[in-house]
Image (tube, rainbow, N blue to C red):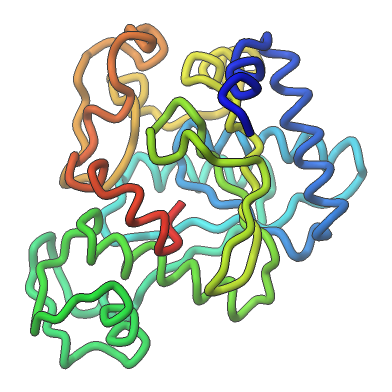
Length: 274
């Protein structure tokens, strides 16, 4: 998609953007079928808004919502878990929680040492895939190694074991420069599937306008000043104002996130991260 077309979509009003998102979701359901789609839910503002859009479409089509998946990387905010559980019950969501249990059973806290020789064959294979040659590493879910093992690997296994043909994620063009060239439908390999991106054309401000207008549930950390939510150990708030009252247009949305991950986002996405 050309930059000119992206900018045109970004400049649309909120209701036009919602309409486009719904059409993308309808196209996805028609192409892949409800049972072959999984919706990635982080508990954040974007993915919860995406699920709301799916619910709207599924209600129009009189079908059930596709299954949702939540990746527990081992250092999740309690407030996110609370939001996920409350919204799951309220919206009657079919939710599968993905974990790399082989890693989690070996650690108790952030920066615990993981010895490669103690890992299962799948994790050893994935470490070779990303070129890791050490004998051990520190458990940090948002490091290069940690992100791949704790997030991408459980997602890959889920796709492989469940015959999933499409994963819907809530990335946006304006959120991170590594995502600014994405398309609404993006074929992937290893494992073979398609990424569906229904809200690429939304801005951060659009997300909050949608949430507040349609009373979509959100994690209470946003009220405390957080704008982007990652692992507890390297996520912080940069203001005491609620997220939607901050200067969203002139300050970086992900400035409160661990910047090591931000710098290698393109590499992580090539390996299968969202």
